[in-house]
Amino acid sequence: MREITASTITEQVAEMCQEANIYLGDDVINALKKALVDEESPAGKEVLKQLIENVEIARNEKIPICQDTGFAVFFVEWGQEVHLTGGSLEDAINEGVRRGYREGYLRKSIVGDPLERINTGDNTPAVIHTSLVPGDRVKITFAPKGGGSENMSTVKMLKPSDGVEGVVDFVVNHVRESGSNPCPPIVVGVGIGGTFDKVALLAKKALVRPLGRPHPKPFYASLEQRILKEVNKLGIGPQGFGGRVTALAVHIETFPAHIASLPAAVNINCHVARHVERVI
Amino acid sequence: MKVKHLHTPLSDEDVLGLKAGDNVLISGVIYTARDAAHKKMVELIERGEPLPIDLKGQVIYYVGPAPAKPGQAIGSAGPTTSGRMDAYTPLMLEQGMKACIGKGLRSAAVKEALEKNKGVYLAAVGGAGALLSKRIISSEVVAYPELGAEAIHRLEVKDFPATVINDAYGNDLYEEGIKAYAR
Image (tube, rainbow over all chains, first blue to last red; front, side, top):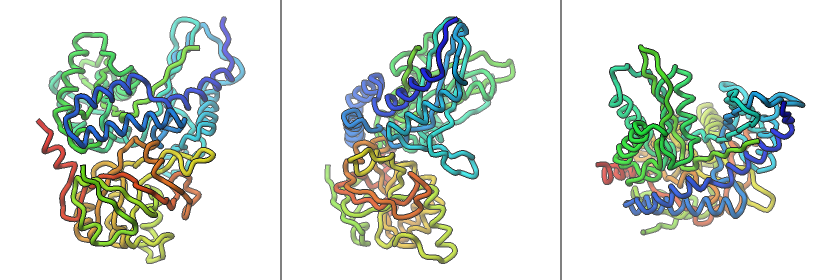
């Protein structure tokens, strides 16, 4: 059986925390450049230019793209032929977050109790979603999530009779109501199906898919394009100053549903759509 | 694009000269405050006790900056969502605050209070924290250090860029923008 030490996980996680927060992925940078071409509003164009310049400053000076360096969210796919030695996975990841956020001068944004609200001082604990998969590899995806866009997220238990139109209306209306709050241009993560808890996770998972990669099923790929088109008719535009590009992408993830249910969820990401992936 | 230069503290005339959609460059001293600092300040106001900073003519920036690296004045420092401060803003305006900088929608009560107290709501580009940090020359914690990133910082800014969203005449750039581009 292959062995991986907890300290290896910690080191990788510490690096990923800094990498994701300082270097925006090419997928997102390309989407911003395309948006600059597509945008018609002068104020919107000016915002997009500043966002592209901001990404360059962050990269050159090795400082975070956005001061909100997020809740540390992880998706871990653990190969079932791998044995972890020297500690627990949760402790190893949290230690990596602690180290990465301290060494990278990243903001510590987590309060230890949601009502008492005292900062934990090290950005832990992380939110960790772990799944066991076949094989002897471990894949870690890290997606720090800003509070402003996370707040503009929602779940609704639609009726099966609401169908495709119900889902489209739900998503588009939600983006309309969110307006300028989640730092548009946004990425819209949509979950459809499963249960109340599952659908929210699907929407979150949709946000770690590289921008520009459509859903593998043609039906959902075209639904993604349809919703994107509808969202971009809203006129909100970059930063809500008015314009054509309100969203850079719409990603849908689905799961089978109960005969009585059509759950849908929207998880919005800002234009700093951070996600990095490593296979160990 | 027309740009107006503002020097803090602001007067009524400065505010009345601004219209929704104007781009401004702010220079001088401004103060940071977000959720936790607002809560503390409003509690003081309600008890009739003095505030840690004088709000007369002041500009409040809704930001929780990232820590500064050695040699930096401040870490990344972009605006946070303003709506969370809606409950506190009318009281802050009554205390003499002239402008606040954030991003995102404001409540009807805030817009009314801006008109009544001759105030203005500005947006900086959300998510452009690295770029905006370059316009901040110095940063010093002046109150509530225990709040970390949420402490009140005194910032010295030079040509800090912002856009007027809600002016003192009831205009709203977010509404005008959507009206112009929705289809």
